Length: 326
Ligand code: ADE
Ligand code: ZN
Image 1: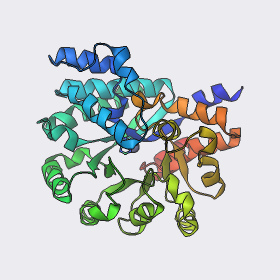
Image 2: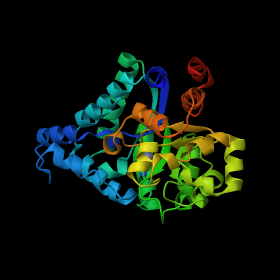
Image 3: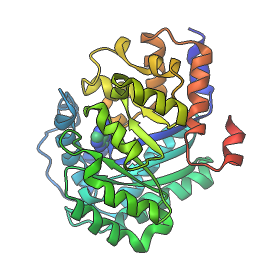
Image 4: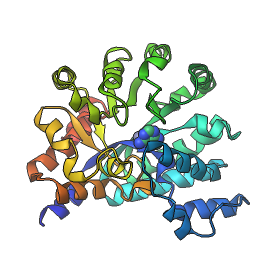
């Protein structure tokens, strides 16, 4: 249809992307080779075949195994640069990306190595590709509050290159309230915060994120749809939701895209955005997510435009920079 070029050409922001989730199988092999590492897969095709998940945890196991090839500053640079080049091709003009420092610290990779590589690529992307950025340090919720506080302590010398804090990994059994003191500290330090909530976890986790943690944004939030009072609150306060349709499909959060809650949430007046989450694992970057919606939902040109506008409204850009794109 005629809306395909419209999707490609709209200026877009991406607000929910794990940089380690943009690690393509080809790069896994290239970095394993460069770092002298053995992989438990004979070739790229057999690794890609392992990308068949029945839930979030099955994905996370493969995701943490894959990122183990990231060792040097250059590895983190190359990973980030590859994503930014893809982003530019899709007319993404602003990115707010997550990284998972604890997953690398556990493997003995210093925080400086991680941030030096990722941030240098983001700076080059701003200069050479015209893509503005924010960098979000995401804590792993399956680890302890103490581990998160230790990571925050270690991050102190680098906070000038961090814009906000997030929370990801295994959701059920690790409610936002487990990290209430941590995020209170992050907010006290003057940072934006967002947490994954309501992907697999119940609507109560979204409620905790909003009212206990006082997040600036919810990542996913699909299951907010199950709580009428919560929907009213999210709409009234225009708290953004970063939805990830292809991720939801691959992780069986929805059984079919036709059942995706996007249009219901949009019609209820929520500030929803479209994002790719972990594009190397879920079969598509940001434009592919928009195209999948167009193919499977009765979505209009005006709604597509609204979603792209929302991505800037929900961003952490200052108002004058948002105004350039909205
Ligand atoms: N880490 C990377 N992608 C994630 C997702 N979709 N949910 C929770 N943790 C993640
Ligand atoms: Zn995510």
